[in-house]
Amino acid sequence: MSYPLPETARAWQARMRAFVDAELIPLEVETEMHDGAIPRDVRERHYEATKAMGLFMPSIPKEHGGAGLSMLEIAVIQEQIGRATNGLGFCYHDLSPFLVHTATPYQMEHYVRDLLSGARNECYAITEEGAGSDVDAIQATARRVGNQFRLDGLKWHVTGANVADIVIFQAKLEDGGHGLFYVDRDQAGIEVVRTPKYMHHFPGHHLVLRFTDVRVPAENQIDPAGGGLQWTYDWFRQERLKIAARCCGAASRLIDEATAFARSRVQFGRPIWDNQAVQFPLADSLTELWAGRLMVYRLAEAIDAKEDLKVQHAMCSMAKLYCSEMANRVADRAVQVFGGRGYMRENVAERFFREVRVDRIWEGTSEIQRMIVGHSLAKRGQDALIG
Ligand SMILES: Cc1cc2nc3c(=O)[nH]c(=O)nc-3n(C[C@H](O)[C@H](O)[C@H](O)COP(=O)(O)OP(=O)(O)OC[C@H]3O[C@@H](n4cnc5c(N)ncnc54)[C@H](O)[C@@H]3O)c2cc1C
Image 1 (cartoon, helix red, strand yellow):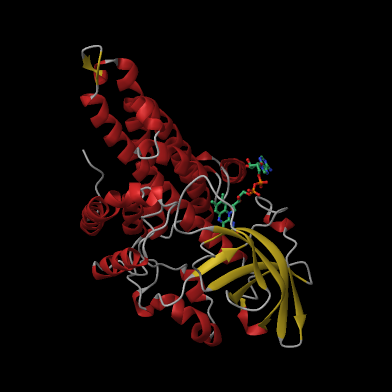
Image 2 (image 1 turned 90 degrees about the vertical axis):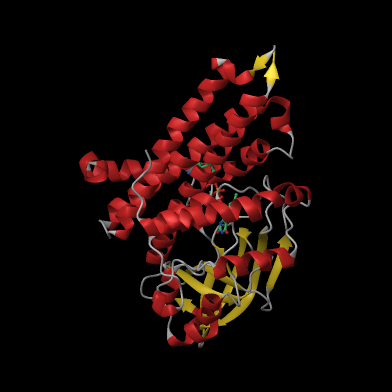
């Protein structure tokens, strides 16, 4: 029995699955052995292939040149790309619609148009050494100097800053509020402090960037009236849903691979699958994957139906919390099923075991998701959230 996905979502699911199987999975081991580096021509081929499929700026409405896909369609696409390791699934262009909705004519001309066409890429510099979960503790500053802002600060974990052209920089304004700014990556005053190594091996690195007396026109401030906050929440909701979907994809691949291995691996004269000690963790994994997938699809439908935003927010946290924790459990079990092979970097379970770990941390840790859910439960009650 499969989930009653609409025909368009079912078609995206089949197309992306075929693409991931044919184009991405065969590159995993080579990418892993080269510390996540993917040759430029291969990357460009992927971008072109996905664009030819109609997968270009799926979150952006058609009138702005995007594919204007539903959240359910995006969820099934993300689920399929989640089946590939090493960040190979980040193979199509997309953009937060909020940047389009808030763009002034100046911002559209200088930044958003290029982001929309895929000519330039952006990265997000919010986290600092002393401010992670508690974003309000950031110390980066934006001081008004005439018709410019002077930006200063030290940012950590800036994903993709090695390949981005534009940095979205978050800082405290002089009145204590938050401001978000478009900054050209090659602008004077931006220094790469270091490129730390992380647990996963992805093409996008996570840089520590120092901003010293970086001057930007006042027009570069995003959504001055909203302080960027609405943007941040909007971004978090989308990203949390996508993480949950990718975690389901990772779990699905792990279950397939571990099951195939267990059925063919013979010890003590019979397939290890014949032992319940091997079968049960995979049965648990499948059961938990089903629960996670139902959450993701239902949440995507709630977003498409424009259901209560506050409830969506809590649902996104529940889906991210559950699916990321679930994928980590599934990866741990898969390593065990593979035995010593599961500890080798050439093995899919070893790679996912490391890679899904960050899904419990980025875009809000599991503890922060629990805080959001707990807060919403106290305020709205169970029926409003899951009734
Ligand atoms: C690979 C990677 C990529 C990233 N990319 C980006 C990026 O592109 N841009 C960007 O700005 N940031 C990025 N981040 C940063 C990421 O968003 C933060 O790591 C995350 O928000 C957690 O912040 P922290 O690491 O400072 O941990 P902390 O906030 O210091 O938390 C440490 C621990 O304490 C717990 N904790 C904190 N407060 C509470 C509380 N009140 N109650 C209970 N537990 C609590 C946390 O859950 C966590 O377990 C990235 C991080 C990683 C690892």
